[in-house]
Length: 497
Image (cartoon, rainbow, N blue to C red; front, side):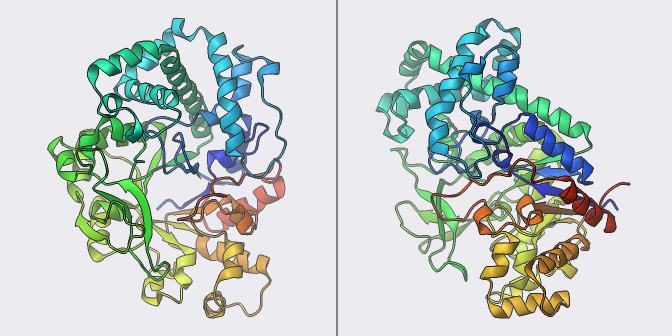
């Protein structure tokens, strides 16, 4: 049985000079460090273009990539940008300023378009032709959105909202330049991504990517195919997604995403989902499917509710969806994010699919749910699982040490057989414990190897502002840390050599 390890770091968290992580040389440098440290996986977050709130889990398209990740130096090297076009070096800013990026990055990328003569590039024509099944609607959607001042498609004039064919044809003609721009951005994104992926794979490292189960209401996906979602005749949601109240939140979580009409998906043979998984299978080596329990049953909250209290459970598509995907695409490497309110029927679905589930170290020491915590005790992890200290939605380990209850801290110390350790000693003991588990794969967020506190936390669920902004500093992943990670990984038979 192969035992392996990897590190979780979003692309946006990479270091670099232009305010956000990109597919540039810093990404290759990070991959080099992973290889030196004996890691075989790099886990990232969704790569989609983001909107209000900057969450990669709320994208304007499930297929389009984020233009902020484009490597500007790459564009300069091929002559589509000049040195004076590049934005000012943002230095080693720890946090991303998305407002600044929104105001400046697209201006730079428009200059690249105007210098590119892209319409006469055969490779661009080939890309547009091969990806037309999603790209045509997406580029038109973004062009109209910009022309409408950024408003949601639900607030567009009815002829656009309801996709009147003649109106859309006129828009394709009048917005030709803007449509071309958004196709160009996707051409850059995919060209650069596949170059980076080829480099990373060449180091013996696989990339774990993320599929959010739901799509954003304000997205091309819902505008272009509203029949696949639970909308009324006015294109308003009938019900939306979320999570029920629990020991962590008395009002639950109200995500607001439109829910699927699973009957409609089944009637098409799950065509949309097959296309979605196929696209993700192409750009990632392993696909982590977020909120996997929603395929067994999903929490439905009436639209307009201010909390999740009034929601109820509805049956999901179950195994039929994944059987259809496997029949169409063959075997797909999947990690099932089976966290949250997990029932025996959810576990049965995960087991039937054969996908590894997730185990979170922090969850094993929760005094509010001792029965649930027992499922996450490190000594009970099965081999067919992926073990984490925490995910992008959790506190960092250092932050967690400082926030847990005294009883939980004592539970942790007794489990690790420690009496009065310092924080760094405690962190090292937790990492050792995680690496020693039976799980085939261990993934550690970069912040935990760096012993960062909660100022480096990626996301606090159900909050707006301050999320998705933390970045790694240049030089933090240094030789000393590489040696430490490599030694830890090798000691537990998770690295070659």
